[in-house]
Length: 263
Image (cartoon, rainbow, N blue to C red; front, side, top):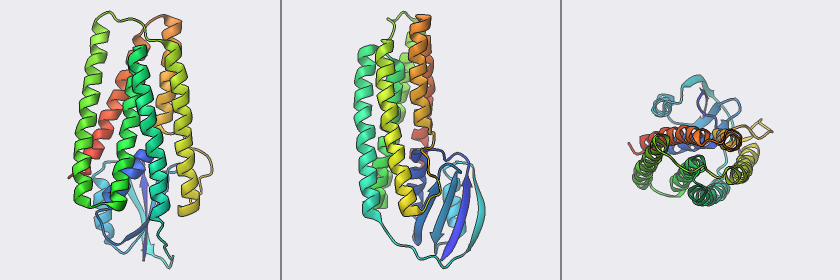
């Protein structure tokens, strides 16, 4: 058994973790993946060629560095049932808030909420693909990854076009109270997801991290809340449009990472 450790600088939230899991699911003889998102460390236990693993991770362009690779006597046990249960839980939470934020964003005319809903949808895609990787074939996973990636890009581009239209023309102010209230609940939902993932790591992968880490999703939620405050303070929709364009850009970036899995 080999124990190999990577430092992955851009691995800072569960989405990147699940992308790596899906990418490495194509490689036989990987027994276990241990993720430390606080320190951005990936530890693998495997009998596969370390160069094949390294090249696969490199394709995701997450700025990885091989720290060590050595023989180990560690005994690995499988626990796919608990992993699937966890993925279903966070998938349902993310998809539910995609629906909530999309509907309230359209009603309140907030592009920040609409963009954040697509970020929730992007996470739902990643968790869904991870479930397919656990219980389905590689070919099926890649086909769905391609559809999910292109669908995400299409939605994000439509959102960016709408933001530009609102920049150039007159549009009623978004309802700042709805932006703030819904984003606070989304923030709580993301905190629950991260807590569950953190708890799972400490039990199954013996992770050292004991606190909920700050992820991109939580930063986005805080950004929408801040935009809502600024909309009310400045009596302008510009802060909402700015956070919208930023989040749409992040959604497109995530979509391209998903598309890499279909190759």
